[in-house]
Length: 270
Image (cartoon, rainbow, N blue to C red; front, side, top):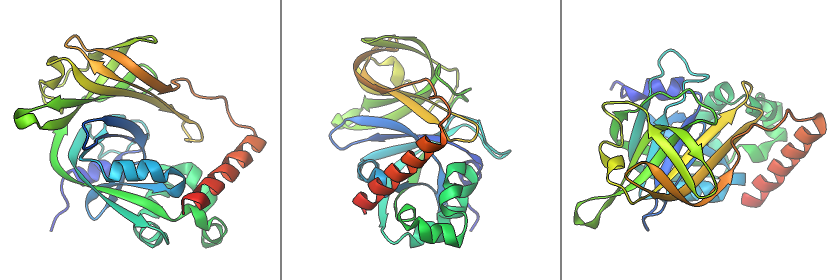
């Protein structure tokens, strides 16, 4: 059986945005490395991020968004895949090593210093166990392409529907104004946007993410703002986290400390 058309786009993507709607109606969004497992979009998080992995993996709805063309291949296209997640706790790293490791080494260069050979994998055994979240797409829709960086983002909205049901909608946006209490965004033009007309309804819970990274992905930063979205696409901010500015290049000692901290966090999670 031929693979679904979106699989090639996920294989070609260097980065993605993941939005998830919890069963209580709250939502969140983060940047990630998109992988493919059994012809489905997948995330594979080290156990240092176990809480995040379980949060996404037990959500009611998840959207994997390909909006950032940086580091992408020729088969990339801007789409969003929305569906329900499935969580697999791969505690021995067998599934990840057999099916996903080569993809991560290609897309995420920092992984190469930890797992690019059998010797490195034995030394850094704690990096291989993963929380793997796959999404069975119920809808695949076009979104607008973004340039990436601090002024470009992805907006996720919890849209109230019929019979008191809530659905997840996403859209590519430009962040025009940002302060402590409000974020003003402008939707990028796209006739078949995954949000449909949802963004014009107003007073919905929403979150916006902007993220940036260095070409070698040694430095990666993201900023999120949560709040209530008005009909004018102004987000009344409840809280925000992170930073839009990339940190300065790391020194050798800083890299060593980061790896040590990652190892400790993965061991605790396992």
